[in-house]
Image (cartoon, rainbow, N blue to C red):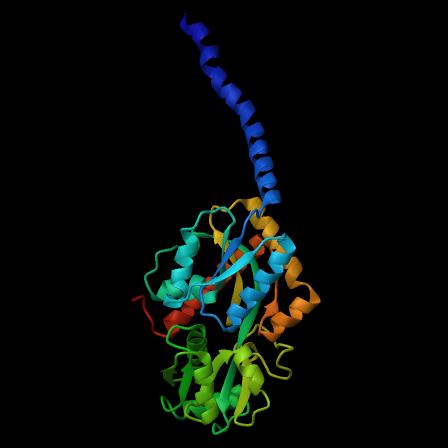
Length: 334
């Protein structure tokens, strides 16, 4: 065979490949969609990074219950607490990416825990966002012994007593502690940190007057709004919340201040897009049901139910906030 005649023969496979690739891509998309239509064919595990009984656990169980009804298949909640949620996160990151293991995650596992301790997962590369079920803000409350009825008065009082006021949190490195650190940094304040083993314990100490300030979860403060032992001075959301009528947002005094937690579904990174998209639509439909939305608000969450792309963008913008908070708290990875 001559060199001249060899040219067309050598190019033929590439020509064939060029024409076949679009067909293969279409076939893959169709098989992925068909796979999603048949999913789930068995029970789906919903891994919860917290112990049973808390507000995040309650939201996870509510959503699992409603997804079981929507998909006519069991969504089984499974509590895997420990290491700030890192144990649960690693379990999901290493699970088969087949749509049968989901992660009901929260802010710490993605935004702060990897900054504070060595973890065996990548918070960005090992997961695909599915849908943010809801967001929650924090509430700045003080004991009645503090003569302040506004954040401005609190700042003036605390500045005159550097290091003498004590603020409590659910523990070192928790979102409440980091939110407090962000506030103190913006206000130029020095306070002493008292970490507790849970937000309810910190709030109990605030009610008793053992500490002067708590930056706690909205759901923790809700039952005590009318208690004369404490004053709620501000919320950490971008604007005021209807859940706390008349309470100003910290951003009104400190523009740009924002400290928001979230609870949402993630899946192992290679989970088929068709399954992720379908699950996201199912979650959005559940969250937007008026009865479910009311229950979520009762658990301290503002319902969201966004798309995978919207959730991914939310997480991208949220990450620098918590990096700054960890720096403000003077914490480093252990």
